[in-house]
Image (cartoon, rainbow, N blue to C red):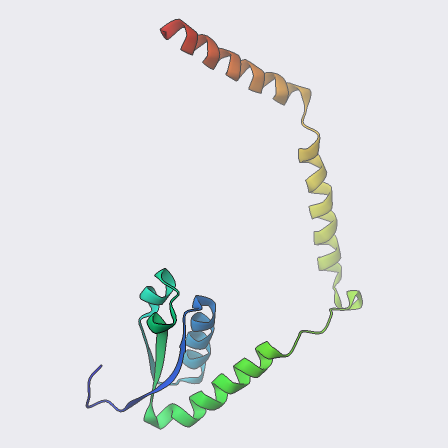
Length: 130
């Protein structure tokens, strides 16, 4: 980091999901920031090797407020979703998924015969070469 650039330390974590969330939110808000040590923190989740988020001093107050809001929203549990909020598309999708799961539970007889023939051919090939 260049000493001439006034960046201030804001946050440190080894959680890549958190870092990506911070990156996307800060980019949306146009905050000037940098992340150091992200690759190392993902390889070795050790507190001393955490990725560090630094923010330009002009954007520090805005970034700190945004980070606090993000942490508050993560701390509050999500309310249970009500089935009445689902749309007809959601219901249709769930029906298709549940119907699709059944087709793999009962394989066709022809599929079983083909698999057995393949194994038989492999067995014959291996026994003839030895």
